[in-house]
Image (cartoon, rainbow, N blue to C red; front, side, top):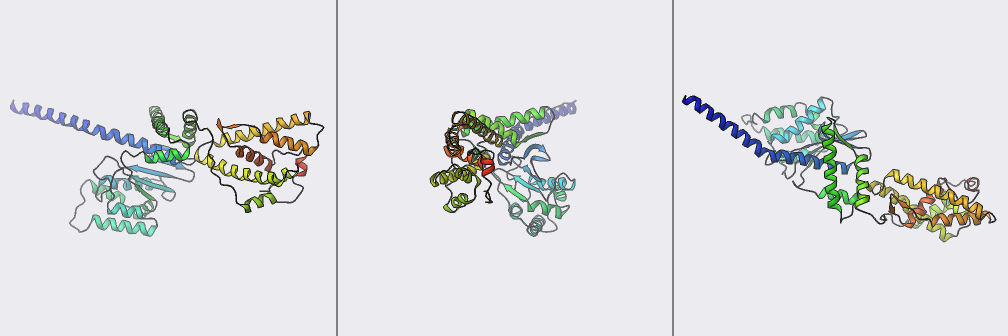
Length: 407
């Protein structure tokens, strides 16, 4: 009877210990999941236009790019130092990557490998691995790691670590290819600086950055939860995120006027355009003076630079830029029709000057945002350079009569 009571008591104690362990592990498990979502957002903000970010697909976070990808493993909250020489969590990253390479899931020649361990302090092996860039450096780092782990024949690496090392070291050529494309990141555990910097560099004002960052976290979590609940891969294309972020920012973080990035072009660039550019020849056909021509070159060059800069920073989408150009063409067409009716007695040059002046003074928005005057005028010159539009009534037959090369 006493033995039975003891058995029951022991069983109850074991159950309580298990419950206690699960309770104490729960915060770390949640923090780990939350950190994954944060890193997911980090990679969305690092993305290119055609990239797609996935969670727990191929890797903890995987970014599919045209012709390659980024595979990231995260080693947060698993140990006191996830990058120590003999830390199983550290070595499991390389064992997992090596397994994926051997299974054909990852091509090490076009994949960037990221080991993210927030708050960790890299050991000597991690430092060597991170520093390796060439194949020779990678193989030297592998030799250093092996000698560090097995300093003498009697030294043991432990039952937990040994099978992990066996997988990592199974094919040193594979491991060397991984190390040559490896980056180790150790951000602070609660770091939001990179997210803030990425948002500010793209399209968010300083005053509203925290609000947009909170929205972005919630948006990513909602998308991931919805996809997982539908038993689908939690993948989000950058285009989808960028469109949602742009729409949110447009409503909640109003930009009154788009920022000018392009400097004024140097004199040699202006001279080149004055000699060669088709849009300048368009203006010469309606007898505009040198001051007007130089202003046109400034507007054309600066708007071209800013158009690219605004799109790359996410201020405006390529689709909205295309719509803006289409709207400008419609404005030109309508004004041309009106001038032909109202000013039909005017000379061709006078009609061209009227058309150019009215189009240049027209007011428009780009994606609901005010634009600088030079951008609208420069966009008109870009259309004239195509030449999709023109100023002289007979511009199609006159503008390319010369053999000048167009800009």
